[in-house]
Image (cartoon, rainbow, N blue to C red; front, side, top):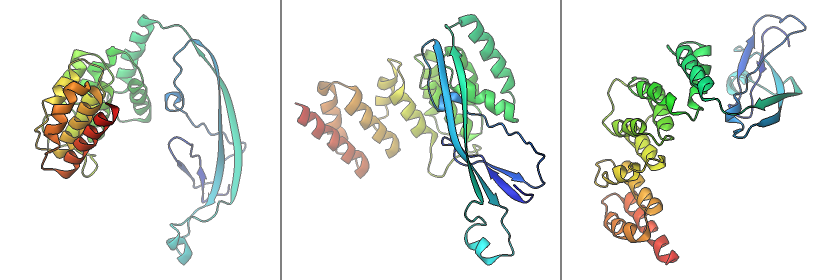
Length: 268
């Protein structure tokens, strides 16, 4: 590509990523694009795996703000060139090693603190994918952050562990959020995310905890409670609770409870 063009190195997982080629790159040029494997595949058994990634590299002319059609189309037209690429790598998965995993987790926590660089972000992403209870303290700490994205990630990770400390974090997430929290999408509340975490948690006390929020002031939380009743309880226990919540003053909540009751009747 010539100077003043963009190189699209998007992938099928994260969408397009744009690298501005503001100067003529040296040739031959080499670009490394990292694929975080757990986003594409989960390898749970020891063995040798072959991973093949395919993508089209697309080259676009740099948008010209002087052109009217450039403004109308957002600055980009049909790709000037599209080059199919393919890369294959061999991944060897060994037997679990508790000691080495502990060292790895400690190292990743150090790399991810503070979370201000690309390497730190990569370490943080790796920590989210490790199903080891030793990551729980790190995400409990992230839960105290005023960064909304970190808090959401922490709640999601904590919901994966059958661990008293992780359950405690989900319970903390049900408390009113600090007004200082940033990076939170409009309409999103941590209490709803924490409720979903309780719904998905493998901890035996998670569902009983969630059921205590049947009369919560947030209808979004109550609707998740309805889902828990309909999908996690026996028909005998679910039926009276769903009948109670079918009279909820919020239509979405009452409709969800009525649908749950109808499914129970159909199964019986």
